[in-house]
Each structure stands twice: as C-alpha cells, then as structure tokens.
Length: 620
Image (tube, rainbow, N blue to C red; front, top):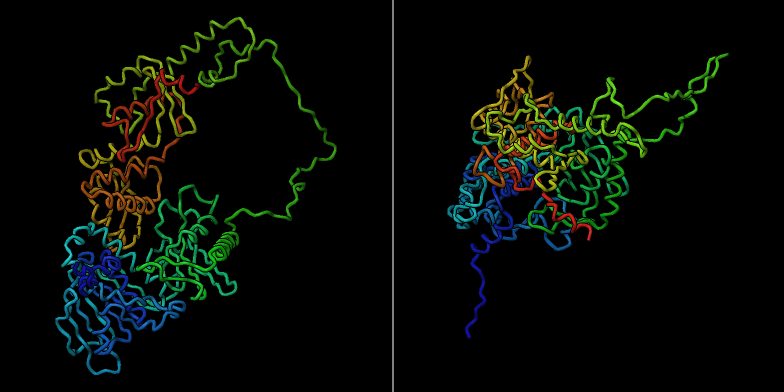
C-alpha cells in the first residue's frame, strides 16, 4: 500500500495558519500595530479603507529592517524576539511567534517598504498570496510602511463571512484602542476612508483615555494605585453611576498587553457590589505589572488570553485595590467608630412636663359602614376584615361589587402612547363585559384569570412587544413628534459610535432624535422625542448604538426591525409599577392589540397559561 502522509505545501500551511491568526481585518491591524510598537516607534499611523477590506496600512518611524531581514520576516516562525524556549518566560514584547506576517501575506497583496537610519536606501517587497513578486532597493523614509490590500482575495469563503462595514470597522477601532491606550509614549493617528478619525499625542494615561473616549469621562475617573511585592497595580476606575449594561469600557492590561481574563474582571466588578444595579458593568482602565516569569501568554494565537501562577493572589490584591480606591472617595459605606448615638437625642427643656401618649376610642365606629369621607374605595376594599359577626354584610358585598365593576372598566381616555383607538377592539370584549380579576406580583408579573384559565404575563416581555411595534410604526409610517430644545446639547462620541450615528441618522430622526453633525465625533442635539421624560441624551444614544450594533451583528437583513428591537429592549425596563386596576387592564389591552401578543420580537414568551384542568396536578 503506498504512503498517504505527505507534507503540505508552504502556501497551504500559511493559509491554514492564517485561519487562526487573521480572523478578520481587525486581526491584521492588531498584528501590524504591535510590530510597530516593538520596533521602537514614537509615531504610528493607521490608514484603513472600506473597513480593512480594501486597504490596511501601518506606517511607523521605528528601527526598520535590513534588505535580508525584510525578506526573512515573511517566513513562518521567523522572529527577532526569542532565540530559545526560556525566552518565553521573560517576554516584554508584543509578538514572538513569527506567524503574523507569513499568515497575512498568504491571503492578501502585501507591499513592504522599510529602511534603517544608518542605511542610505531602503527595501521594497511585493507579495501576492505568499509569492514574492518583487524584492528591490528603494528610496523611502526611516522606519517601516506595510500595506495589506485585498484581504482574503484568494479565500473567497472567508471573505464572504465578513460582516458589514460598520461592524468590521468597530472591531478595527477596538483593536487600535487596545494598543493605543496603554502606549502613551507613542503618538498615534488613525485614518478611515481618507478621513482623520483620531489623533493621539504623547501624554499620560488619563489624557489618553479622555482623548479616545471623550471629555464626558474627565470627571468620572478615579485613580488607583497599589504596589505589593512584585505586583504593581495602577490606572483608573469610573464612578458607579457610569456603569452600563454592556462591557464597553473595560480595559485590563498586564505588562502593557491587553488581556481578557474573566477572573480578574470579576475581581473588579465584585468590588462595585451593592453600588450598581444588577446586570450593570463598571468602567475601568487598569494596568498590572508583574514578573513576566509568573505569567504565560503563549496559550492562544491572538495572545489575548493569559495564565497566572497565582491567580488568587492577584485577584485578592486587585479586588482590595479597587475597594480601597472607592472607599477613599467615600463611595462605599464605612463605619464611623467615633459616632455616638446618644448625641442624637434631643435635649429636654428645663421645667418641661412629659406627657404620656393617649389612645382615644370611638365605641360607635363601624368599619363596614359606608362613609362619605375621603377614603377611596380601592383602599377600603383591601382592608383586613376581622372574623366576627356584623349586621351589614349584605350591604358590604353590594358596595364591593359596585367598586369592582367601576375599577374593571376599560378607560376610554387616551392613557397610552401606543394604542390606536381606531383599531378593531372586538377581541377585547371579554375585558369590557367580564370582571377581570388580576394583580401584580413582584412588579414584574401580571396574574390574570379569564377565559377559564390563569394567565401569567411577563410585564417586561410584554412591554418589549408593545414598544417594538410602536417604534416599527414610527420608522415606517408615523414618525415620533420631536420636542425642540431651547439650547442644543453637544455630545461627543467615539469614532465608531459616530460612524454608526451617521449611518442611522435618518432613522433616529423618525424616532424623535434631531441630531446635527458638528465634526467627526461631535453632534448637536436639537430635539428629543416628545414622549420622553428628562434623559441623559449621550448615555441614551450610546446605549442605543451598542444594542443596535449587537442586533445588527446577529441579523443584518432589516435595519428597521433591528432598530425597533434595539429601542424596545432599551426602553422596556423604564416603567412605573401599576398603581390601579385600570392600568393593569389597559396594559393587557395594549398587549393583545399587537400582532403577536404571545411572543417578544426576540422570540421569548410574554405569557404562560394554566388551565383549570391543570391546577389539580399541582396538588397531587
């Protein structure tokens, strides 16, 4: 039988390796920028076109490469960072595997220009799919310029799996910020489609954070610092009120390398416990410096995941440091051991007489007799009825029945922003003719009894369905009325958030947000939805953008539906608990007037029915 095992061709092996290293344009951006950082550059430019699908170019003023090194750097496992296995445990550079450039060159057109300061001429290399087309001397500036064009040109299946330009751009921006945030001794410039996105001068850590994420964080950042043995922790944490539902502004760096570590993130988040609502995440920008021999960064091709020799020790120190910073700023509750409760007792004036409390009784009072006082029927209905005989039982039942009929009447005035009175309401006939027993449980569930069954309605899910159809109608047919601001409010977003706002600006206008672009990242808010109460417009828009980006990532077929779902999810939890039976029944009327009252737009159930026949099963 002939041999069947053979070595893969070099270009095929490189394409396979590219599947691990270069997952999307942002992966190439990360590798190229990190190489520029390792080269000793003090200024790095990132130039991107069509969210990296057409061009990714990184230009630096670093050390550059010689004529032979420029050729060798595209070979697999060619590196200047390590020479032996022991070097893996004292790494101080970004890259070390020697796979990035070889992987990128296997799936793109690459043009490299590089020159060392001591050389008179530089080097130019052209590569197409691992094939070297040109390797010649050329005139160029000191440093390195590498351009990656037509990414995945020879792997069309991979190119077809790329997301929309806005999503791919957001990933590129995120990778750029992960490197630019921590290297404050390097100036960075970012261009997208010939537009200057951000220019970051050399500065300190706090200045770099503000330059990237906006001035709204200027007064919300608190410093933290702790040195314990070989472990040094520093950086900034944000105020608890700046917490959000999504982990957008959480950056953790270990030895100047961005890492994603669930255990350490939990150490920070748990320090905020009882200061932020459940489900919200605090913002933080934290640097951890420790002995490189105590961590292992060689556990994934992207080098984002790391392992520590003693995770519990670092967890404890990090958690205590965050708590200390919060406590020093009077953000966490503390005991005052100098407090004397006795000092709170008001002093008795001299020669004053202390009068004991008295109780007065009305022997003729009958709690079941009708009164014309100001006490409402609804409050008297729920009073405790003692187990004793009395004379006016029949009259009490008659009054109670009359109250129930009055309370259970559907309101005819316009209580709702979402219900159209012109629509057919025959399906709600049972609400008008029958007395609908229902009550609210835990301000989240509505328990009703009608049509020979018990129905439990999830109020949040029901509101999501109602709001979704309301906002979908606003986007397609009836825009929301805009309340013009007397003085426009100026908001500043990140570049990716600004790109998203520009993309959906027309839809936001239909939803009641009148935005006028001032520059690449600033907008003037000229009007807000008339139905809105006082809101923080910047935080509201950021939350809408982040949710819309997630929904767009999951399903990019229908912009209107995705945006309506985004708005519904963002607003569904903002409601006041029902105070009356009228409000409960009217909510049910709204829900049953939607197209699919039993499901949310996300496919979750809004209600659960229990028939009378099923009840005995719970007691068997």
